[in-house]
Length: 341
Ligand code: X2X
Image 1 (cartoon, rainbow, N blue to C red):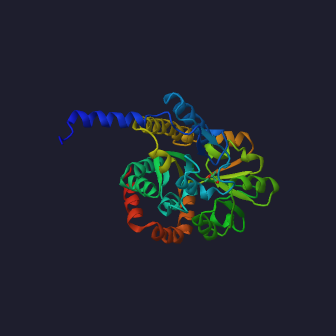
Image 2 (cartoon, protein in one colour):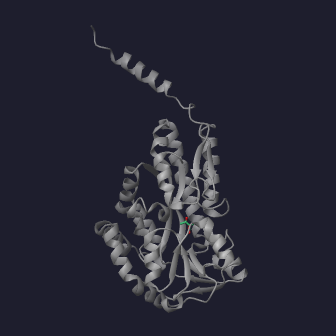
Image 3 (tube, rainbow, N blue to C red):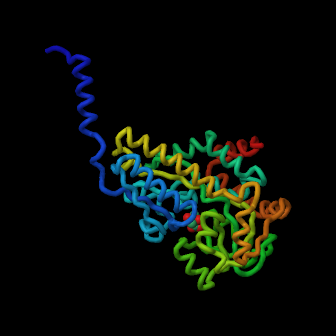
């Protein structure tokens, strides 16, 4: 028998590609989002869904499920939903994914990104080998990370008193996400941390069963109008909360090469804009804080010396979690931060 010619093989390949042509996807791709549709985080979900639908001529119909509808109130299981393919997409916080990807606790190391260069240092870490390594780890666990975004640097709010020094946090009941590093941080600061999902937290603020919480200004404090329950905000940039637009590996593998390209490009574009919006009025100038003042909040922006007192108080947590995350990875990140001007 003659061996098949190159032409025959080429025709076979073309035929196989045509057979797996786009258009046979499921009618809906589910996207998990912890927050609601308002603000930079939620708006990015809507924008991504619209652009992907348009650019794939309707082949990929992404539906955002806001307010944690897909994980029924348990935000630290979002990553598992992606792994299992229950959610096809998520714009997820690294905090919520950190129980499954412990390396993502890197961004929750207190005061890793210091002072005026905080945003530049963060971008540098994400673009460095450290950022690439984090994406590899996420992918090895069954989620394809497509783009970095940002919830933002997290600031402390409470309804009891202005917080300027660690002593001011004594016994304040602070709602934190159910990720253990946060319990450690607030215990070391002398507060009484309670972990709670975001949906329940808002009820707790309204009923006054907790005194405070910590979240970024543009993506959470403003869209959720936290001034209705919280009087004081301490701007201290103690940890940062990146977002990642990721896709379930199972769902990703089912896409054609052309659609993978559209999804990836759109994710990068939408999340670059999302990042700018999350930072608007907070990087360099602090105009975004005016919105809080206008709504009656007392804004306390810590001086570098005041920040240093909190950094000292949380050093044992930093050291403990450096081990948990992995010394090599943390040291590589520290080096990038040091080298950032
Ligand atoms: O629950 C929070 O605090 C939030 C909305 O910021 C996250 O999902 C990490």
